[in-house]
Length: 171
Length: 131
Ligand SMILES: [Zn+2]
Image (cartoon, rainbow over all chains, first blue to last red; front, side, top):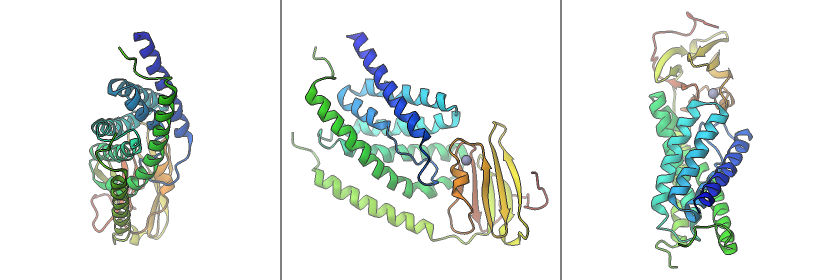
């Protein structure tokens, strides 16, 4: 069972990392610092609801570390780590508040927390509040992309649950 | 399972939040009269350029000692990052800025250019052209 869990997490990390790397190749729609689709979050949200917080956190951290390593930028590690951690903490709190048909809510608020985390990191690194000019438009895009990735994660969760293909083993 | 917060309530909440954010985005995009371009690196203003006093276009390069390079181009009344070796190129794609509060930000190089009413650096535009 331990091996099964390890393989499952490795598989999820690989999927998330692939999505992350492909997304990094897509040119930005608008020149807004920190704006992104956040498609890899589909895996994190799905894992949080299906595999639980510990496994989801490990998948997220592995993906961020490896993703920054592959893209070769220490700065991007700092920004995605602060965004990712804040997003995950809020998602963790919201997990018990929503039903399985409201998973998209977690993703929207998570995306906003991600934006705030990144802005805070940028504020600390650049020692200036300049970047907050972009906060409203970042949050608007976060709401929209969060709704999209959240819906995707929710559909994935409900369908895979019906299949009973992947999930936590009953003791 | 009965939800603690109805889906409808969430939707109203997000709609209100979106309206508020759009209002905020419009509000910040319609102000600012500054004509002095302050170039900041790691929060320190390394250069101030009075854009209204620029008569001839010129450019200079800002390096951060960690491999990042941003070629900044100054023209009468406007400024932009013309070239950069950051991965996202957001700073280049922002294009020329000439008014308003919208700053040019390069997150990887920790560089920002802001138009303000006062110069924040001793170094004026023309006397120390580097590149
Ligand atoms: Zn840049």
